[in-house]
Length: 132
Image (cartoon, rainbow, N blue to C red):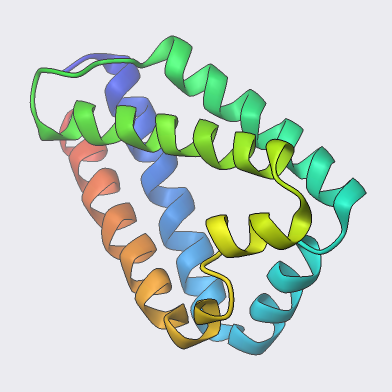
């Protein structure tokens, strides 16, 4: 496994764990903030620009589709970040809410989303730190 894969795996893993745990403790505030974010076109556009930059950086530096599960998952995460950022830039706010944030089902499946982030983060962090 490359050192870049190990670094990105640790970075994404720890990020997902920290954000997932914080989201788990603050459901009402997080749902309200995310809903308001995708309804504010200027903020959504700037947010989309930042996400696209992060996604492009990930795709350009780590587009590895072989070598095990961990490198492929890191690559998929990079592509998903890029696609999510493009969705924020290309679609109007109501469509972005429905496409990227599950629309009205976001609150219903909130803890599934949080659990997925924490489990993905744990897997990536473990794999990245184990690679040392």
